[in-house]
Amino acid sequence: MPLSSVVYSVAFALVGGDQQCFCCMFSAVRVSLTMGIFMSRSSRSLLKFFALVLSFSLFAVACGDDDDEEGVTASEATRIVRETADGTLVLSTFLPLSGSLSSYGPGMRSAAELAVIDINEAGGVLDSDVKLMENVDTATDQDVAVAAVDKILDSEADALLGPAGSGITNAVFNKVTGRGLFQCAASNTAPALSNRDDNGYYVRTAPSDDLQGPALADIVAEGGHTRIAIMARNDDYGKGFKEALEKAFGESNLEVVESLSYDAKAPDYTAEVKDVKKANPDAIIVIGFSEGAKILAAMIEHGIGPGQKAVYTADGMQDQGLVAEVDPKNARVLDGLTGTTPSAGTSNDFLGRFRAFAPETRVVYVSQMYDCAIVIALAAIAAGSDDPAKIKDEIVGVTRDGEKCVDFAACKPLLEEGKDIDYDGVSGPIEFDAKGDPEVAAYDVWTFQQGEIVTLRTVTVSKE
Image (cartoon, rainbow, N blue to C red):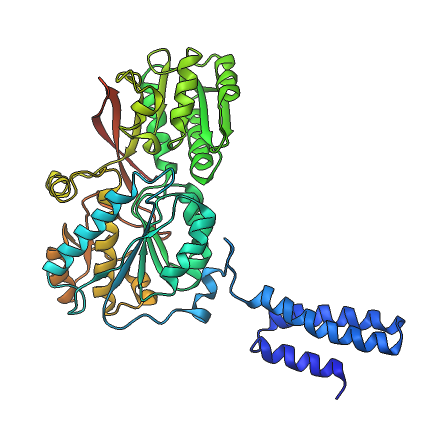
């Protein structure tokens, strides 16, 4: 048999009949062999050998496990699905304990722990206690997260709770959903996530910034402001939020006099602040995380900080520690800074229980994380299985168009009786749409007063 035939036969066997991967190898070998026509016999033989080696290399690139942020797509999940279904629902948290979102991680982890306690005290799922694995730290870093998520993918986990940041989720998205691991995120708000190809393996209990943008824009407009400047971090969260704000202000006929994206890792923001000041806005919106402290300090230095101008922000900067980072000698340096954040919940009972359970942690997104665990457990009961492929098919249904129930203990027997349920969670109604997004969102409007974060009111926004 000619060496070329051997090459092609081995290549096709190696890819297991995958036509796309085979074509990739075939093309490379064919080109190499064609080039060999113009070479000596010995050179051609050597080239044929290297063509075989090249084809193996292309096989590894085109068909092997991809550790980058693209990975396999969710539509391929049925081909490489993980085998974890064993009758015991296993959850894993993938939350930041270090990096710029590290203040969120402990509270969200505690919320997952409290949910599992409540589930198991009510009889568990499928006649077994739900298991919660140890947290895997994302470090609020995309490269770290892409490597770290393998620990969960290689485990017995049926579902992943997290990550905290939309950018981290985007980085690991295809890896997670493409491996058939169900995912519920409690704090991902980037609008772009609604349009990812997840094959039903991804939902979020935090509403998209397509809803928070208009909510914050309304708050700014209520202040009588007409010239708006926006500063947003240059990532999935910041870009999506900025676009939602620009759209909302355009519909309200308010002028956006400056709109810029900044590098979240920059050592200094003087240039950006000067650009904003030059535009002469009467209200400034900063969409950031912990780096927002540097921006606010620069704004104060240039006479456009809180107390000097109307300054607004959102959930990423709702942090009591921000005061000391801006000016440790002035406890009221941020008084007047106002923002929105997905509501901590409509259930005072839950918040009281949570604060007693985890008194030293933040409550931002804890209600949403609690609901993530609960809806997964309810979907597993509805599916009669802990198989992620079956859980995903039930997840939307347990949050809408059925008999109302407001906690796991009340919802479980309804499902076991064969009834359809509509779980209204501690974070709100939820009501997942076909894309796995909440259709209704409640936002707390908060501000700094005398150095403390104070909730002023709650507003509700729904999709049209």
